[in-house]
Amino acid sequence: MTTAEETARRGELGTFLRAHRERLAPGEVGLPATARRRTPGLRREEVAALSGVGVAWYTWLEQGRVDTSRQVLDAVSRTLRLDADAHRHVLALAGFAPPRTTLDPAITGAPEHDNDNGNLRTMMDSWPDSPALLLAPDLTITAWNTAYGTLWPDPGRLPADRRNLLLLLIDDPDHQRLLPAWEPFAQDLHRHFRAHADTLPGDDGVRALTERLHATRPDLAHWWACRSVGGFAPRTIEVTSKKGQLTYTVTLLTPAGSAPGSLLVHTPAPAPI
Image 1 (cartoon, rainbow, N blue to C red):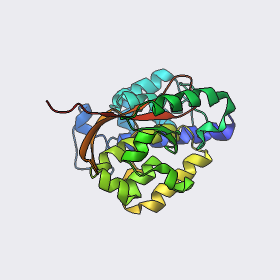
Image 2 (image 1 turned 45 degrees about the horizontal axis):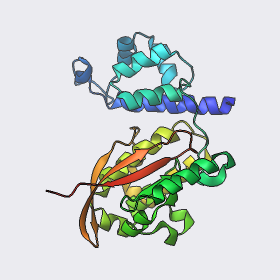
Image 3 (image 1 turned 90 degrees about the horizontal axis):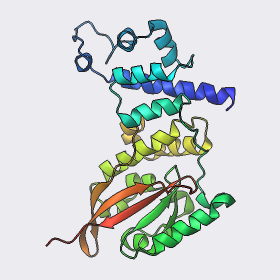
Image 4 (image 1 turned 90 degrees about the vertical axis):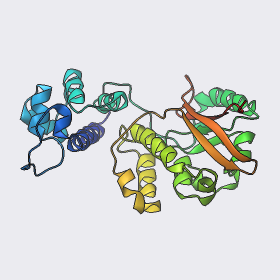
């Protein structure tokens, strides 16, 4: 990793910690709230004291000026009440997890993964009743099965630069008509994307999608500014299709040994007895 990349990652780590510090109320960590607080959340000296580190060191950590140990990051994460996903994200930004590869919108572009992709596509095609997508890490749609193109607008009929699941959910009327409760789904996908994006602050694909999200829906600026991250947990959705209301459990899988990306699978809910 170059010095510039290390500096950028330290900056992302500091921004992430500061955002979580500012949204944590003093009462949540057992501190009294006072009327004299001029800034939201906890003060830096409070986080430092509760984490057992010096104020100057913690300040430099938020400013992206220093590297630190895993033990310090574990302590700070506990102080900030970070959940498991956010804690893993902090460790990844600090270099305590395997580095992620550069986001590649074309999942089939790496020859060494051709066999994996072919197997995944064959598997998806064998699911006549389970719509499925292959997604690149930036949520670009790279492959889909017939069941998906039947339930949702067929990605093959969309311009290539529109084939991004998050962009379609936030800005495409047809997707929003089929999924009226699209917002929680889209927010979960955005948190999943941020977990990848924050570890690649200099990546052109990350920057391009981030800028496009801002430009496409400036009214959702509070979403794009949010520093929350997390894995995409299985969720139940109701799709208003031509056949009526259909219920699916949607799961995001990361197959071992495949090219960077994920498999989004819709499992039909059992019919009521």
